[in-house]
Amino acid sequence: MTVPRNLEVLVTSVATDLMAVTAATSSEVSERVLGDLVAYFDVDLSFLRHHDHRVHTSELVAEWPPRPATAAPDPLKIVYFSDADPVFSQTERLSEPTILRAEPSEATGSRGSAVVAEVPLRSGDVTTGVLGFVKFGERTWQREELNALRAIASLFAQVQARIAAEDRLRYLADHDDLTGLHNRRALLGHLDSRLAAGCPGPVAVLFFDLDRLKAINDYLGHIAGDWFIRILAERLQQGGDEKFIARLGGDEFVVVPAAPMTADAAESLAHRLQAVLRERVSIDGEMLTRTISIGVAVGRPGCDTTSDLLSRADQAVLSAKGAGGNCISVFTDRMSEEIALRNDIEMHLQNVIDSGALVLHYLPEVDIRTGEILATEALVRWQHPTRGLLSPDQFIGVAESINLAGELGRWVLRNACAEFARWRAAGVGERIVLRVNVSPVQLVTEGFVDSVAEAMAEFGLDRGSVCLEITESVVVQDIDTTRVTLAGLKEAGVQVAIDDFGTGYSVLSLLKTLPVDTLKIDKSFVQDLGSNAGDLAIVRAIIALAEAFGLELVAEGVETDIGARTLLHHGCHRAQGFLLSRPVPGAQMERLLAEGRVPVHFA
Ligand code: C2E
Ligand code: CA
Ligand code: CA
Image (tube, rainbow, N blue to C red; front, side, top):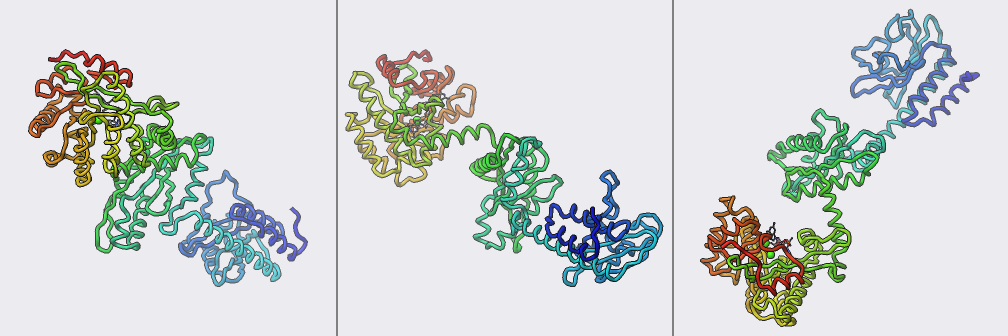
């Protein structure tokens, strides 16, 4: 280092050094400047301290010579003015440079008495810190020297103020106004660094979503809503575990535990936090509780991106909310498979309907006393180019959610009717009934009855040969529309069956007045018949009901001999199920119809 020639050059060189300082370089540059000053003024040590008047402390920010990294922690790093020795305590409100003699003490080291020069850092009327110089033995300070120190202290004070302002700006850019928690931007930055290759993993993310916050905002006002959110934010911060917490706006919070964490551990953390958040909050004398849905996902550093991880946590919370709220859901491979499938289906479904990738399989319905085939149920499948044959449960829900159920249903109805007509033209299946499943959306669509009647007319199918299967829930949801539709179908000679009977809202009270022909006992009651007494009781009740109302009865999902025997024993002889036949492609159904029966041996 070249020692400046005179005070003026010294001040200029310090000013140049400090001008370029940033928050990141400030302690290093300050230290270097102190080193220059120690050399120039020929003293033994120098220190720079910042005061925090809110808590009445003074913190060491730089010193020369620097403390060796191996040294014990500095006991004077933070000093409380209330219990400091005179060297420190008088600096709290120091306004002018002061020289004092210090006896051997902690502040000066124990090398005998010393002369200490203290120069305040000032911002307006406030002393924001102190610049100090220690010379062991004797030293006299000239007025010009002290004036130069005053100028240098003011340069340090400016840097201090600038960095504080920058910190504040950075804080505001990274934090949420309402709660003081981190914001989305900070969360993204945090996750980016946590997911960098080589970082410890897995990194867990807990996504919190308040159930029905809207009700608080609507009924108690936004101030109450904000207050409620602030309390939740405080509660989230409690608890020992170190964690990064962000609010994404609205009622969404994200917690990232500082420690690597498996999905299982993150799930139990979610349970603990959920319990804390569920405790009641008093607002305006009202005790409020709001349940919370939590989605959990984990990411592997070096493999997953921040957006992967957040979207999984988001999916998990959606599934938690979908399960009725107040629920914790962990993102699973299954969920990611479902999302991929869903996206895929959404993208391709429209084309699928026109492209010939849909196929119909048929499930025979059999008289289990004789094996005679009485009906056949059309079941749609999607021959997917890469995923194989997809079952309707995998894509009908998606089709409904993107308003394709109507189109899909029309395709099924027309194609089933067409195929059925071909069989009949070939002389098979003339006495059997074709059953077609109808989704709830279809049933309430305008013109539905006409479109069924048209299809039957177009393919020359006589009255009573087609039966539509509808579920209980749709009947109950919109009873007036259903009543009109069912009456229309009846008039057009279309039969109606209630599918999955026993699982939905009970339509018992409506059965009497609705034009329904058949009940299909849901397979969940049939599969374990013979071993489950509860199921048997339900099945017997449904059998009695069908008799009382004069309805046909079909048991679905017959898988075992004992099940078939039990049904027969209680008077139900129409059934379908894997024991009798799997769903089969159309050509095979045609062959079965030509034979007219499947082998049975239960009677
Ligand atoms: P569903 O109407 O209850 O149809 C019976 C389902 O049970 C079929 O599944 C059939 O393969 C299966 N099944 C038959 N026997 C047994 C058995 O013994 N054990 C078991 N475990 N299952 C048996 P699939 O074909 O996967 O159809 C599932 C559901 O998708 C159907 O249930 C129906 O609700 C719906 N679906 C099928 N095709 C259509 C359609 O064209 N339109 C609409 N809207 N829904 C359809
Ligand atoms: Ca069905
Ligand atoms: Ca069913």
